[in-house]
Image (cartoon, rainbow, N blue to C red):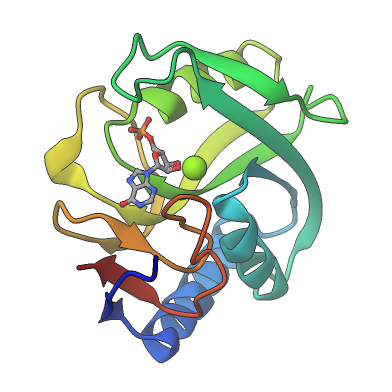
Length: 172
Ligand code: IMP
Ligand code: MG
């Protein structure tokens, strides 16, 4: 079945905003090496575009997590499906996510990463749905704050489809 998708944020707007974030992050981390951690799969498109616009040294790693149980409104305990390849001890970690919704996933993930002894941990998300927040999460860099709508594109999926759309769209 093919769903109707309405554009919410155009490709040009997304690209422009990612450039701004890249410039801001490069400034904030001047003289440092940023260890970017991509939360798969949704964060992958955003992380690649962001990394290309960061002018300080960058290293990358990937992590995949899923909520326990099929219900996304479950306990907030997340299972690590794929852990990082490298240690983050003493590194300046920047977690890159597609979207912060309830905040459950990120809250758990950030606490877990902080326990591994990094120099710093910050969070950068392409999208934020503040109206949906259940657990408080400190977001350091946000691309766009959006209303409570289900969005796809730029890494975000609906039934695993539409991650490849170069813009952010709303289904329906
Ligand atoms: P939460 O913040 O723990 O509720 O979960 C965030 C995760 O839910 C994101 O990383 C996405 O994978 C998924 N998600 C939340 N809202 C959307 C959406 O509008 N479209 C696609 N995926 C979403
Ligand atoms: Mg995600």
